[in-house]
Image (tube, rainbow, N blue to C red; front, side, top):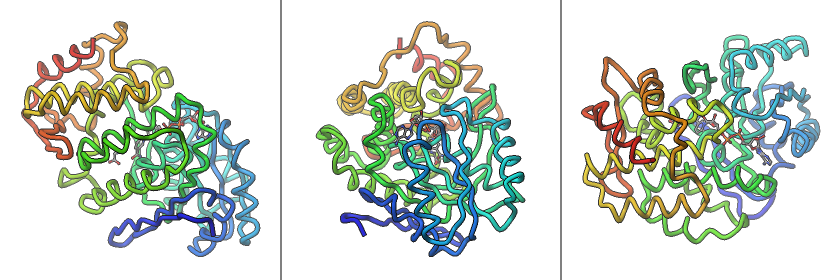
Length: 360
Ligand code: NAD
Ligand code: GLY
């Protein structure tokens, strides 16, 4: 077993699971998956960038553990997170002979995790799945918590459901092959975790130098996410909504740009800055604390100004179709001080307009 493996248990009643994080644990994934006893056949869903790098290692490990894998590969990119693509994958799985006794392995970034998780949730009314996240976003955030889904032209993640994985295997050595832009974008979610739950982590983030030894940082973030999900699995009490800090405006920017123009984390960087501006004016976030978040985003060369072609009217329209908008009011997450989030329902359209304008 490779050294320095950390395991975080997500203690959900009825569906607890482990998130195993370590450097070089991909070749032993089959053993860990076989221990779950969730089936002898699976579809290994991946994308056109990740599959050539890691699919065979995963499939070989599964075969060595007595599981028959069928690779299903789709085009890389946010545009694949669609109902069309979900249907195509389901149909391929049917023609490959999968049924309710099969399971799914999601091998890739957040796009694959959300899409393959959604496929697992709907295929034969739901089959088990295992997440093998290969980006920072996916390792620290999207692979944990069971939110699965696809986008529509009207907005992000508007079709989907909760479906918890049976296991998450995060091999931090896979982060070595990420292009710089994709590596950097992942830190938007890490910085978000610092803003809502762990202010001290900002110091550690500022000291990151290179891609080695990221296991402790990934594990620290998984623990933050796991504890929040345990408190509010289906986002009913509002605690889980804290994870949406920066996402209301960020998702609108991501959708308005056309899926794929800005990477998810790049759009969230702008969403975080807008949410910070609103936190300063409406919740008393000290400007020097907001500045620390900006500095962290800048360290990872994440965008801090909004392209003029994305006008405020278009973004407001998209924000109104967001799941968080209800009866003309939006549930908006603010951060009154670094490390502590709050949910507010008194944020008006003009507050949001000002926050968007602060990005120009
Ligand atoms: P992504 O899955 O598109 O991955 C980014 C790019 O990196 C892709 O081109 C991919 O092919 C490539 N890639 C992935 N792993 C690689 C590796 N190890 N080496 C080389 N290339 C690799 O994007 P992402 O940023 O991982 O995830 C963004 C998605 O996650 C968005 O759709 C977002 O909505 C979703 N998300 C979901 C949740 C959730 O709770 N479900 C949370 C956060 C984000
Ligand atoms: N990424 C937001 C959530 O999981 O709730």
